[in-house]
Image (cartoon, rainbow, N blue to C red; front, top):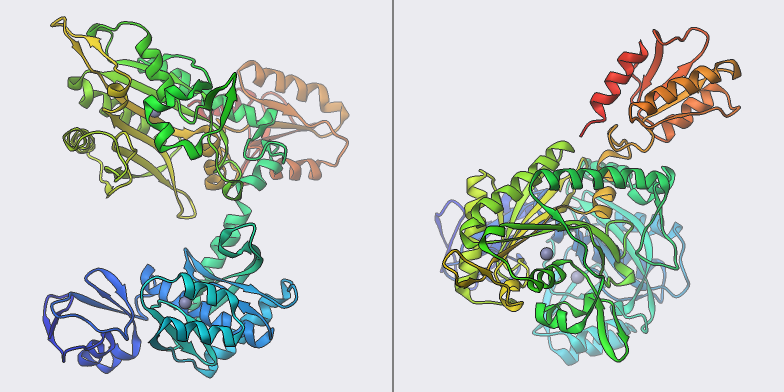
Length: 630
Ligand SMILES: [Zn+2]
Ligand SMILES: [Zn+2]
């Protein structure tokens, strides 16, 4: 048989040859370093046979950043962990151990609860296994035999996995550990040059709270020790920048167990919120949007009309009032359609752009709630544009212009994704062709590069999703622009055309910063809490050196407040050094120290980051005002 190599040359192999055989045929070095074979685009264990005509690529230890190669490495490391756990803690039962993003885990039932010390012991044992050498052996077996094996080993979780496994059963062995596993795995443990166990957590067997609670051990592994070091540094930095921690330290927001997933905003947090809200209102006015306000709670009939009852119900909070089913709105769109449908419309009113920062509720599982990033209650900078089909191109472009205007203000790097029709959708293929085509045209007109995501569109229309890459290289979705021909149809929306006939308008959904909660969370992590002057709850803090300087400090603060700046005076009896340090910890962008030498002509200023200078009060005011404008 023949397989095709990445450079399109053909390789002649005996029938039934494996990926490893192919690597050997190319060269001994390649065979030694081989990790995995990608055949016709999907990953396959090196030990498995290739098929005639397949296009193959052999990944090696040199593909140290390839996500598939890393998954194989980490999955193999997970098996080493299970081997170590069974040896160090006899009686340990093993459950599952997959690779995950950035690492792997394995779930165990330890005979006695273990503490964090176990991480170091297990890690050391894994290193010993690597040094000692481990080879993976793979074979297939019958279901009964597999069941019997795990019963004898006293592994009830594996028995259950055998019972519910689909397809053929394969085993992998290294050392004295045999696992039920689909693979793929490394040939041996040598490529695992760096391994680290990171944390312990509780995890229910099969994610079911009625089943036993297991101990999940998280770890990661790399082909290169330098890569592990860089990864650990990023983790440390991410911890330091965790928005939940910063939100508390900076006094912006909090959470309570009595309202899971629903943030409480402190006064300082509301300053940040209102800057964003003012920006939203100002730009909406400039760009021809009108503000509306619609109810939070609707009869299920509205959700049936919109399709949410059928496609989105599990994410909605429902309640019964006077024997009628109601649902809290998870998005503003159906309410806006209802609002549109209440009165007649003429083509002269179009495009009709209506905006509402409405309160939205989504029923997220408590297990996935995460600070401001995954919440049950939030507010989007949301708007809907109702327009004629001829107006679609201009309106889409205007939405993208608006989005990039905002992203430039906050100096964000944006990545664009075009999300296309999902399997579970409303409408005809012709309608989807039209809607997707319009989005493609708008992206081309704006000159934006993008990637396509098949199947990721909304059930009512395709979307342009706008993601930002943050300072740690993580990606977050912010905005979305969606073209929808389904809601107008389902709600029977019409306008009277210049031909006096009734026509259906198109509908564009767009949120640009996304949810304000989420934006604040992401932006805090991106900046590490060093908010730009315009968003800083306190822009200037003035520190009088002694009581004698208080009056002057107050009058400078008044003067700055008079210009619309947020200035405060720290008059506490603490030492000057302590007060300067507190201002730094609270990330106040400007600190003014006022002592004997200071006057309105000579103000000594420390900028966040350490830069110091002496300037006049007028020059300071000017500098602040320039930086505080959005
Ligand atoms: Zn496995
Ligand atoms: Zn919408």
